[in-house]
Amino acid sequence: MTTAKSAAIILAKELRLEFRTRELLTATVIFALVVVVLFSFAFDPTAAESRRYGPGLLWIAFLFAGSLMLNPSFAREQNNETLDALRMAPIPGFAILLGKILANFIFMSLAELVLVPVFAVLYNLSLAGIVWRLILVLVLGTLGLTVTGTVFSAISAHARMRELLLPLLLLPLLTPLLIAAVESTASLFAEQPALDRTWLAFLTGFDIVFLTASWLLCDHLLEE
Amino acid sequence: MKGRIIITALVALLIFCAGYTALFVAPDEATMHAIQRIFYFHVASWNAMFCAFFVAFYASVAYLVTGRRKWDALGVSGVEVGVMCCTIGLITGPLWARPVWGIWWTWDAKLTSTFILWLLFIAYLLLRGLVEDPEKKASLSAVFAIFASLDIPLVYLANRLWRTQHPQPVIAGGQGSGLDPTMSKVLLLCLFAIFCVMILVLVDRYRLELLRNEAAEFRYEIESRGLDAADDAATAALQKGGQ
Image (cartoon, rainbow over all chains, first blue to last red):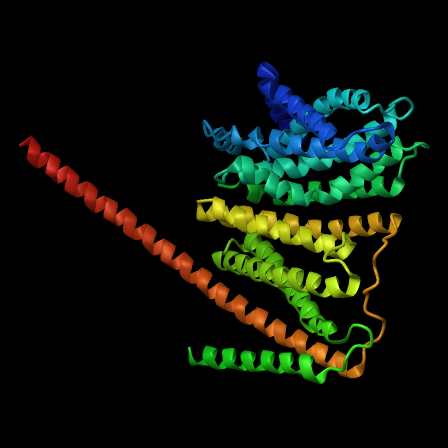
Protein backbone atom coordinates (compact mmCIF):
# COMPACT_ATOMS: atom_id res chain seq x y z
CA MET A 1 0.00 0.00 0.00
CA THR A 2 1.28 3.47 -0.74
CA THR A 3 2.30 5.83 2.03
CA ALA A 4 -0.48 8.29 1.21
CA LYS A 5 -3.19 5.66 1.30
CA SER A 6 -2.03 4.08 4.56
CA ALA A 7 -1.54 7.50 6.12
CA ALA A 8 -5.14 8.30 5.20
CA ILE A 9 -6.29 5.15 6.99
CA ILE A 10 -4.33 6.05 10.12
CA LEU A 11 -5.73 9.58 9.91
CA ALA A 12 -9.30 8.24 9.67
CA LYS A 13 -8.69 6.03 12.69
CA GLU A 14 -7.34 8.96 14.74
CA LEU A 15 -10.28 11.16 13.76
CA ARG A 16 -12.82 8.45 14.54
CA LEU A 17 -11.21 7.89 17.92
CA GLU A 18 -11.27 11.57 18.78
CA PHE A 19 -14.75 12.38 17.54
CA ARG A 20 -16.26 9.57 19.59
CA THR A 21 -15.47 11.50 22.76
CA ARG A 22 -14.11 14.89 21.64
CA GLU A 23 -12.39 15.04 25.03
CA LEU A 24 -8.99 16.06 23.66
CA LEU A 25 -10.41 18.94 21.63
CA THR A 26 -12.58 20.24 24.46
CA ALA A 27 -9.72 20.10 26.94
CA THR A 28 -7.36 21.86 24.52
CA VAL A 29 -9.76 24.71 23.79
CA ILE A 30 -10.57 25.22 27.46
CA PHE A 31 -6.89 25.11 28.43
CA ALA A 32 -5.96 27.72 25.82
CA LEU A 33 -8.85 29.91 26.99
CA VAL A 34 -7.61 29.66 30.57
CA VAL A 35 -4.16 30.79 29.45
CA VAL A 36 -5.64 33.71 27.49
CA VAL A 37 -7.75 34.79 30.45
CA LEU A 38 -4.84 34.46 32.89
CA PHE A 39 -2.76 36.71 30.66
CA SER A 40 -5.39 39.43 30.90
CA PHE A 41 -4.74 39.53 34.64
CA ALA A 42 -0.97 39.51 34.24
CA PHE A 43 -0.99 42.38 31.68
CA ASP A 44 -3.86 44.82 31.73
CA PRO A 45 -4.87 44.78 28.06
CA THR A 46 -5.79 48.11 26.56
CA ALA A 47 -6.38 48.24 22.81
CA ALA A 48 -2.91 49.56 22.02
CA GLU A 49 -1.18 47.09 24.30
CA SER A 50 -3.13 44.11 23.08
CA ARG A 51 -1.89 44.96 19.59
CA ARG A 52 1.63 44.72 20.93
CA TYR A 53 1.27 41.70 23.20
CA GLY A 54 -1.69 40.01 21.54
CA PRO A 55 0.09 37.93 18.88
CA GLY A 56 2.69 36.72 21.36
CA LEU A 57 0.03 35.81 23.85
CA LEU A 58 -2.02 33.96 21.27
CA TRP A 59 0.94 31.88 20.12
CA ILE A 60 2.12 31.14 23.66
CA ALA A 61 -1.38 29.85 24.39
CA PHE A 62 -1.24 27.67 21.24
CA LEU A 63 2.21 26.34 22.07
CA PHE A 64 1.26 25.46 25.64
CA ALA A 65 -2.02 23.90 24.56
CA GLY A 66 -0.25 22.02 21.77
CA SER A 67 2.45 20.65 24.05
CA LEU A 68 -0.31 19.19 26.24
CA MET A 69 -2.62 18.07 23.45
CA LEU A 70 0.04 16.19 21.49
CA ASN A 71 1.01 14.04 24.43
CA PRO A 72 -1.76 11.39 24.11
CA SER A 73 -1.04 11.00 20.39
CA PHE A 74 1.43 8.17 21.03
CA ALA A 75 0.90 7.71 24.76
CA ARG A 76 -2.56 6.27 24.27
CA GLU A 77 -1.14 3.64 21.92
CA GLN A 78 0.80 2.36 24.93
CA ASN A 79 -2.19 1.22 26.99
CA ASN A 80 -3.05 -1.82 24.90
CA GLU A 81 0.27 -1.94 23.06
CA THR A 82 -1.57 -0.96 19.89
CA LEU A 83 1.56 0.69 18.52
CA ASP A 84 3.07 -2.77 18.08
CA ALA A 85 0.03 -3.77 16.06
CA LEU A 86 0.42 -0.66 13.88
CA ARG A 87 4.10 -1.43 13.39
CA MET A 88 3.32 -4.98 12.34
CA ALA A 89 0.93 -3.78 9.65
CA PRO A 90 2.45 -3.96 6.15
CA ILE A 91 2.62 -0.18 5.76
CA PRO A 92 5.60 2.20 5.68
CA GLY A 93 6.62 3.53 9.09
CA PHE A 94 6.31 7.09 7.87
CA ALA A 95 2.60 6.49 7.14
CA ILE A 96 1.91 6.00 10.86
CA LEU A 97 3.73 9.20 11.72
CA LEU A 98 2.20 11.15 8.83
CA GLY A 99 -1.33 10.03 9.70
CA LYS A 100 -0.83 11.15 13.27
CA ILE A 101 0.75 14.45 12.22
CA LEU A 102 -2.23 15.18 9.97
CA ALA A 103 -4.72 14.22 12.68
CA ASN A 104 -2.98 16.46 15.22
CA PHE A 105 -2.84 19.22 12.64
CA ILE A 106 -6.60 18.97 12.16
CA PHE A 107 -7.28 18.93 15.92
CA MET A 108 -5.03 21.92 16.51
CA SER A 109 -6.58 23.84 13.59
CA LEU A 110 -10.08 23.15 14.90
CA ALA A 111 -9.07 24.43 18.31
CA GLU A 112 -7.59 27.56 16.70
CA LEU A 113 -10.75 28.05 14.68
CA VAL A 114 -12.64 28.42 17.95
CA LEU A 115 -9.94 30.32 19.81
CA VAL A 116 -8.96 33.03 17.34
CA PRO A 117 -12.42 34.69 17.13
CA VAL A 118 -12.83 34.49 20.91
CA PHE A 119 -9.40 35.99 21.33
CA ALA A 120 -10.18 38.78 18.87
CA VAL A 121 -13.34 39.63 20.83
CA LEU A 122 -11.70 39.50 24.26
CA TYR A 123 -8.66 41.55 23.23
CA ASN A 124 -10.57 43.91 20.96
CA LEU A 125 -8.69 43.12 17.76
CA SER A 126 -10.31 43.30 14.34
CA LEU A 127 -10.04 40.29 12.05
CA ALA A 128 -11.81 42.00 9.16
CA GLY A 129 -9.74 42.03 6.00
CA ILE A 130 -6.92 39.84 7.30
CA VAL A 131 -8.73 36.51 7.66
CA TRP A 132 -7.08 34.67 4.74
CA ARG A 133 -3.63 35.99 5.47
CA LEU A 134 -4.05 35.08 9.13
CA ILE A 135 -5.13 31.57 8.15
CA LEU A 136 -1.98 31.19 6.05
CA VAL A 137 0.20 32.15 9.03
CA LEU A 138 -1.78 29.88 11.36
CA VAL A 139 -1.50 26.93 8.97
CA LEU A 140 2.27 27.30 8.58
CA GLY A 141 2.81 27.77 12.31
CA THR A 142 0.51 24.93 13.31
CA LEU A 143 2.17 22.57 10.83
CA GLY A 144 5.57 23.22 12.39
CA LEU A 145 4.10 22.75 15.86
CA THR A 146 2.36 19.47 15.04
CA VAL A 147 5.26 17.94 13.06
CA THR A 148 7.81 18.42 15.84
CA GLY A 149 5.21 17.81 18.53
CA THR A 150 4.07 14.48 17.11
CA VAL A 151 7.66 13.28 16.73
CA PHE A 152 8.45 14.29 20.31
CA SER A 153 5.24 12.70 21.50
CA ALA A 154 6.57 9.43 20.07
CA ILE A 155 9.80 10.04 22.00
CA SER A 156 8.24 11.02 25.31
CA ALA A 157 5.72 8.13 25.18
CA HIS A 158 8.54 5.79 26.21
CA ALA A 159 9.66 7.91 29.15
CA ARG A 160 8.54 8.29 32.71
CA MET A 161 6.83 11.62 33.55
CA ARG A 162 5.95 11.98 29.89
CA GLU A 163 3.42 14.78 30.46
CA LEU A 164 6.19 16.93 31.91
CA LEU A 165 8.88 15.80 29.50
CA LEU A 166 7.08 16.70 26.26
CA PRO A 167 6.90 20.47 26.92
CA LEU A 168 10.52 20.39 28.10
CA LEU A 169 11.64 18.83 24.83
CA LEU A 170 9.27 20.71 22.58
CA LEU A 171 9.11 24.32 23.78
CA PRO A 172 12.82 25.23 23.50
CA LEU A 173 12.90 23.67 20.04
CA LEU A 174 9.92 25.76 18.98
CA THR A 175 11.44 29.15 19.88
CA PRO A 176 12.33 29.98 16.24
CA LEU A 177 8.79 29.03 15.21
CA LEU A 178 7.38 31.17 18.00
CA ILE A 179 9.40 34.21 16.94
CA ALA A 180 8.45 33.82 13.28
CA ALA A 181 4.77 33.14 13.96
CA VAL A 182 4.45 36.01 16.43
CA GLU A 183 6.19 38.47 14.14
CA SER A 184 4.10 37.57 11.13
CA THR A 185 0.88 37.67 13.17
CA ALA A 186 1.92 41.01 14.66
CA SER A 187 2.44 42.51 11.22
CA LEU A 188 -1.13 41.45 10.38
CA PHE A 189 -2.57 43.04 13.53
CA ALA A 190 -0.64 46.29 12.96
CA GLU A 191 -2.32 49.55 11.95
CA GLN A 192 -1.39 48.82 8.32
CA PRO A 193 -1.85 45.04 8.00
CA ALA A 194 0.84 43.47 5.87
CA LEU A 195 2.12 39.98 5.23
CA ASP A 196 5.75 39.73 6.28
CA ARG A 197 7.40 37.63 3.56
CA THR A 198 10.66 37.04 5.43
CA TRP A 199 8.90 35.43 8.35
CA LEU A 200 6.55 33.46 6.13
CA ALA A 201 9.56 32.08 4.29
CA PHE A 202 11.14 31.27 7.63
CA LEU A 203 8.03 29.42 8.81
CA THR A 204 7.92 27.45 5.56
CA GLY A 205 11.60 26.61 5.94
CA PHE A 206 11.04 25.42 9.51
CA ASP A 207 8.21 23.16 8.38
CA ILE A 208 10.23 21.70 5.51
CA VAL A 209 13.34 21.07 7.63
CA PHE A 210 11.49 19.21 10.36
CA LEU A 211 9.10 17.37 8.07
CA THR A 212 12.10 16.06 6.12
CA ALA A 213 13.90 15.15 9.34
CA SER A 214 10.86 13.23 10.60
CA TRP A 215 10.60 11.41 7.29
CA LEU A 216 14.28 10.41 7.47
CA LEU A 217 14.25 9.44 11.13
CA CYS A 218 10.78 7.91 11.55
CA ASP A 219 12.00 4.30 11.31
CA HIS A 220 14.33 4.85 14.26
CA LEU A 221 11.54 6.59 16.10
CA LEU A 222 9.10 3.71 15.77
CA GLU A 223 11.48 0.75 15.87
CA GLU A 224 11.16 -1.75 18.66
CA MET B 1 46.92 3.80 32.73
CA LYS B 2 50.43 5.27 32.79
CA GLY B 3 49.84 6.90 29.42
CA ARG B 4 46.68 8.54 30.67
CA ILE B 5 48.44 9.95 33.72
CA ILE B 6 51.12 11.45 31.48
CA ILE B 7 48.52 12.92 29.12
CA THR B 8 46.53 14.36 32.02
CA ALA B 9 49.71 15.90 33.44
CA LEU B 10 50.54 17.40 30.04
CA VAL B 11 47.08 18.92 29.70
CA ALA B 12 47.34 20.28 33.25
CA LEU B 13 50.66 21.90 32.34
CA LEU B 14 49.13 23.30 29.16
CA ILE B 15 46.18 24.84 30.95
CA PHE B 16 48.55 26.29 33.55
CA CYS B 17 50.62 27.92 30.78
CA ALA B 18 47.45 29.20 29.13
CA GLY B 19 46.23 30.68 32.40
CA TYR B 20 49.62 32.27 33.09
CA THR B 21 49.93 33.86 29.65
CA ALA B 22 46.31 35.06 29.69
CA LEU B 23 46.80 36.73 33.08
CA PHE B 24 50.37 38.02 32.89
CA VAL B 25 51.73 37.93 29.33
CA ALA B 26 48.84 39.25 27.26
CA PRO B 27 48.86 43.08 27.03
CA ASP B 28 46.30 45.15 28.91
CA GLU B 29 43.24 46.03 26.86
CA ALA B 30 42.86 49.79 26.28
CA THR B 31 39.34 50.36 27.66
CA MET B 32 38.44 47.25 29.62
CA HIS B 33 41.81 46.57 31.30
CA ALA B 34 42.09 43.46 33.45
CA ILE B 35 38.46 42.40 33.08
CA GLN B 36 39.04 41.74 29.39
CA ARG B 37 41.29 38.80 30.30
CA ILE B 38 38.23 36.67 30.91
CA PHE B 39 37.88 36.79 27.11
CA TYR B 40 40.59 34.12 26.71
CA PHE B 41 38.56 31.59 28.66
CA HIS B 42 35.14 32.75 27.51
CA VAL B 43 35.88 32.38 23.78
CA ALA B 44 37.84 29.19 24.36
CA SER B 45 34.93 27.54 26.20
CA TRP B 46 32.53 28.41 23.35
CA ASN B 47 34.94 26.90 20.89
CA ALA B 48 35.17 23.72 22.96
CA MET B 49 31.38 23.66 23.31
CA PHE B 50 30.83 23.73 19.56
CA CYS B 51 33.35 20.93 19.07
CA ALA B 52 31.68 18.83 21.78
CA PHE B 53 28.18 19.33 20.36
CA PHE B 54 29.47 18.55 16.91
CA VAL B 55 30.88 15.27 18.25
CA ALA B 56 27.48 14.56 19.81
CA PHE B 57 25.66 15.28 16.54
CA TYR B 58 28.05 13.14 14.53
CA ALA B 59 27.82 10.29 17.06
CA SER B 60 24.01 10.44 17.04
CA VAL B 61 23.87 10.15 13.26
CA ALA B 62 26.47 7.36 13.38
CA TYR B 63 24.44 5.51 16.02
CA LEU B 64 21.28 5.62 13.93
CA VAL B 65 23.17 4.47 10.84
CA THR B 66 25.25 1.68 12.40
CA GLY B 67 23.25 0.84 15.54
CA ARG B 68 26.45 0.31 17.53
CA ARG B 69 26.28 1.17 21.21
CA LYS B 70 29.68 2.84 21.34
CA TRP B 71 28.34 5.72 19.21
CA ASP B 72 25.55 6.23 21.72
CA ALA B 73 28.13 6.37 24.50
CA LEU B 74 30.10 8.96 22.52
CA GLY B 75 26.91 10.95 21.88
CA VAL B 76 25.96 11.26 25.53
CA SER B 77 29.57 12.10 26.43
CA GLY B 78 29.63 14.85 23.81
CA VAL B 79 26.40 16.36 25.09
CA GLU B 80 27.47 16.24 28.73
CA VAL B 81 30.84 17.83 28.07
CA GLY B 82 29.22 20.35 25.72
CA VAL B 83 26.71 21.34 28.38
CA MET B 84 29.60 21.76 30.81
CA CYS B 85 31.47 24.09 28.41
CA CYS B 86 28.23 25.92 27.65
CA THR B 87 27.65 26.48 31.38
CA ILE B 88 31.18 27.88 31.74
CA GLY B 89 30.50 30.22 28.83
CA LEU B 90 27.15 31.28 30.24
CA ILE B 91 28.78 32.07 33.60
CA THR B 92 31.88 33.87 32.30
CA GLY B 93 29.76 35.88 29.83
CA PRO B 94 27.65 37.80 32.38
CA LEU B 95 30.70 38.21 34.64
CA TRP B 96 32.36 40.02 31.77
CA ALA B 97 29.26 41.85 30.57
CA ARG B 98 28.34 43.38 33.93
CA PRO B 99 31.38 45.69 34.27
CA VAL B 100 31.73 46.33 30.53
CA TRP B 101 28.16 46.65 29.22
CA GLY B 102 26.67 47.60 32.57
CA ILE B 103 24.19 44.71 32.47
CA TRP B 104 24.42 41.00 33.25
CA TRP B 105 22.39 39.83 30.34
CA THR B 106 20.91 41.09 27.08
CA TRP B 107 18.55 39.24 24.75
CA ASP B 108 20.94 39.54 21.87
CA ALA B 109 20.94 36.90 19.11
CA LYS B 110 24.09 35.08 20.24
CA LEU B 111 23.20 35.07 23.91
CA THR B 112 19.64 33.94 23.35
CA SER B 113 20.64 31.20 20.92
CA THR B 114 23.20 29.84 23.34
CA PHE B 115 20.71 29.84 26.15
CA ILE B 116 18.25 27.87 24.01
CA LEU B 117 21.07 25.52 23.01
CA TRP B 118 21.82 24.94 26.67
CA LEU B 119 18.13 24.28 27.46
CA LEU B 120 17.81 21.85 24.55
CA PHE B 121 20.75 19.73 25.58
CA ILE B 122 19.72 19.79 29.24
CA ALA B 123 16.40 18.38 27.96
CA TYR B 124 18.41 15.70 26.13
CA LEU B 125 20.06 14.66 29.40
CA LEU B 126 16.69 14.66 31.17
CA LEU B 127 15.23 12.49 28.42
CA ARG B 128 18.00 9.95 28.89
CA GLY B 129 17.33 9.84 32.58
CA LEU B 130 13.64 9.17 32.07
CA VAL B 131 13.74 6.34 29.51
CA GLU B 132 14.39 2.93 31.05
CA ASP B 133 14.98 0.61 28.11
CA PRO B 134 18.64 1.08 27.00
CA GLU B 135 17.95 0.44 23.29
CA LYS B 136 15.05 2.89 23.25
CA LYS B 137 17.05 5.39 25.24
CA ALA B 138 19.85 5.31 22.68
CA SER B 139 17.74 5.63 19.55
CA LEU B 140 15.25 8.17 20.92
CA SER B 141 17.92 10.42 22.35
CA ALA B 142 19.85 10.22 19.06
CA VAL B 143 16.73 11.35 17.19
CA PHE B 144 16.27 14.18 19.68
CA ALA B 145 19.92 15.24 19.41
CA ILE B 146 19.58 15.46 15.63
CA PHE B 147 16.39 17.53 15.90
CA ALA B 148 18.05 19.81 18.44
CA SER B 149 21.12 20.25 16.25
CA LEU B 150 18.94 21.11 13.25
CA ASP B 151 17.16 23.67 15.38
CA ILE B 152 20.27 25.60 16.41
CA PRO B 153 20.90 27.38 13.06
CA LEU B 154 17.18 28.21 12.92
CA VAL B 155 17.23 29.66 16.43
CA TYR B 156 20.22 31.80 15.54
CA LEU B 157 18.73 32.93 12.23
CA ALA B 158 15.39 33.80 13.83
CA ASN B 159 17.06 35.84 16.53
CA ARG B 160 19.27 37.63 14.02
CA LEU B 161 16.31 38.55 11.83
CA TRP B 162 14.29 39.57 14.84
CA ARG B 163 16.92 41.74 16.46
CA THR B 164 17.93 43.51 13.28
CA GLN B 165 14.33 44.60 12.85
CA HIS B 166 14.28 45.97 16.40
CA PRO B 167 17.49 47.93 17.03
CA GLN B 168 19.28 47.18 20.26
CA PRO B 169 19.95 49.92 22.79
CA VAL B 170 22.91 48.27 24.49
CA ILE B 171 25.55 46.69 22.32
CA ALA B 172 28.90 48.24 22.91
CA GLY B 173 31.11 45.37 23.88
CA GLY B 174 31.92 43.77 20.53
CA GLN B 175 35.60 43.03 20.07
CA GLY B 176 37.13 45.73 17.90
CA SER B 177 38.33 44.36 14.60
CA GLY B 178 41.91 43.18 14.73
CA LEU B 179 43.58 41.80 17.83
CA ASP B 180 47.00 42.71 19.11
CA PRO B 181 49.47 40.04 17.84
CA THR B 182 50.40 38.93 21.38
CA MET B 183 46.71 38.78 22.25
CA SER B 184 45.92 36.54 19.32
CA LYS B 185 48.83 34.24 20.19
CA VAL B 186 47.61 33.97 23.79
CA LEU B 187 44.08 33.40 22.50
CA LEU B 188 45.27 30.58 20.26
CA LEU B 189 47.09 28.97 23.19
CA CYS B 190 43.97 29.25 25.35
CA LEU B 191 41.75 27.86 22.61
CA PHE B 192 44.06 24.90 22.25
CA ALA B 193 44.39 24.34 26.01
CA ILE B 194 40.65 24.39 26.71
CA PHE B 195 40.06 22.22 23.65
CA CYS B 196 42.53 19.65 25.06
CA VAL B 197 40.79 19.74 28.44
CA MET B 198 37.47 19.17 26.66
CA ILE B 199 38.84 16.21 24.70
CA LEU B 200 40.39 14.75 27.87
CA VAL B 201 37.11 14.97 29.78
CA LEU B 202 35.20 13.70 26.76
CA VAL B 203 37.39 10.62 26.40
CA ASP B 204 37.15 9.88 30.11
CA ARG B 205 33.39 10.31 30.04
CA TYR B 206 33.19 8.03 27.01
CA ARG B 207 35.16 5.31 28.82
CA LEU B 208 32.96 5.71 31.87
CA GLU B 209 29.83 5.31 29.74
CA LEU B 210 31.23 2.13 28.16
CA LEU B 211 32.03 0.75 31.62
CA ARG B 212 28.56 1.68 32.81
CA ASN B 213 26.98 -0.12 29.88
CA GLU B 214 29.08 -3.17 30.59
CA ALA B 215 28.21 -3.08 34.29
CA ALA B 216 24.52 -2.75 33.45
CA GLU B 217 24.71 -5.79 31.19
CA PHE B 218 26.42 -7.85 33.88
CA ARG B 219 23.90 -6.74 36.46
CA TYR B 220 21.09 -7.71 34.15
CA GLU B 221 22.62 -11.12 33.60
CA ILE B 222 23.17 -11.71 37.31
CA GLU B 223 19.63 -10.66 38.07
CA SER B 224 18.14 -12.92 35.43
CA ARG B 225 20.23 -15.86 36.62
CA GLY B 226 19.56 -15.08 40.25
CA LEU B 227 15.84 -15.00 39.56
CA ASP B 228 16.06 -18.34 37.81
CA ALA B 229 17.90 -19.87 40.77
CA ALA B 230 15.33 -18.46 43.19
CA ASP B 231 12.56 -19.77 40.97
CA ASP B 232 14.06 -23.27 40.95
CA ALA B 233 14.46 -23.18 44.72
CA ALA B 234 10.85 -22.09 45.12
CA THR B 235 9.59 -24.86 42.85
CA ALA B 236 11.68 -27.42 44.74
CA ALA B 237 10.31 -26.16 48.05
CA LEU B 238 6.76 -26.36 46.72
CA GLN B 239 7.27 -29.92 45.53
CA LYS B 240 8.72 -30.85 48.92
CA GLY B 241 5.73 -29.26 50.67
CA GLY B 242 3.34 -31.14 48.36
CA GLN B 243 4.81 -34.55 49.14
